[in-house]
Image (cartoon, helix red, strand yellow):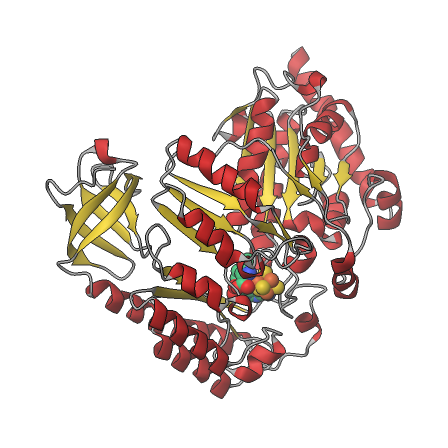
Length: 519
Ligand code: SAM
Ligand code: SF4
């Protein structure tokens, strides 16, 4: 056995001894020993979360990397694996920005990385299972490479049960931090590099907005822009209000400045992000300014495409509809999660609208924007959902004519009111309902695609198609994926494409000669 192998063996033995010791220690002792002072161990607590709305929101514009951390990553690499929604993808861009400013380079190769962060999602149980699977897979690598730092962040780290489980069963994790602690990454990395214990920093204080964080965006064509954080809607099935904190809006001038910078860098599309973007501005005490006003201001900026997600029907007001109806760079696609077609289920979900009110909103949107594409999110198998209530979802799907839908089987989340309900719907029935719903979603999507046959559509070309490098791919204004043959030089441009063939989820076409838009 050479020196290197001896070191590895010693490392493995000490790791195993550590794991054995952890196994024999009570969870309370572990919490006392490892949790950082700022951590308040608590299960998601809806009552506590509801009270937080009265706390003040503070804005910070003074983020900087401490001098002693500015070159600490030189010659080293990081990898961030992202699970879940656009919000997480954008948080990953921020963490990548921070790590890059610390000198780290990014890599896609797990074995090459010196820091691996798992940016997690807690929305459904299977999302969490995937992360625990990955945590397990990383253990041999950590044993092989003891200096590797593995961190768990994102929504799962806001849950006490998750932190507890990692502490007890996954001692090879070096770092756990919450969704409100991203700006602390330089300090956390430093502690993980120089300390011996697992670092856990999950703040329960959640009212602040940190501006001027660095970002390394994933592409150069489309960009995410956060307009607000958190959610105060408290749908009874949803963990987000507990993992993402209270609703708080960025100041309009900060958002507008960010969009202007993106234009200057050549971006062609921005998507304004929030868990419930229609509540934008409701927390301002000094100005009357909502999403409609923000969209109106962004409408005047010279960026070809502006999208926003996700909308909550309850807060979707007439001012917003009026502004969106102007068109231009405000696109004809609205993602409007309905969740269920049954007013009784909607009430149990605490969605705060009925089927009839939702349909009335759709009517108003269609009146103002006759060409708008509507898409949605639907949950099937909410506790005690009857066959008739499920059928109401099916009929609503048809009545609205949604062109696409993200569909989910209800997944109980600890700490949410719905998870405490007894549920008499067997899993098999839930699966059948999902299957039936998906058949309908596919049918409606395919039908909507057929209407494009022979049409000329404007496509923002994003790059080569994932399946065939000789084919280009991009999205229309109404968010339809188009694959077509064309020169690579049009990547990043908006071009006109004639649709020659339609599929369930995409369109095929040919680039209309001489019809490339002059921008
Ligand atoms: N804020 C958005 C809204 O109100 O529709 C969406 C947020 S959530 C990240 C995305 C979707 O996940 C929701 O629209 C809902 O359909 C689904 N979802 C949330 N909690 C769920 C749960 N416990 N089980 C199944 N699906 C869930
Ligand atoms: Fe969750 Fe969306 Fe409801 Fe907020 S509005 S609680 S994010 S489903």
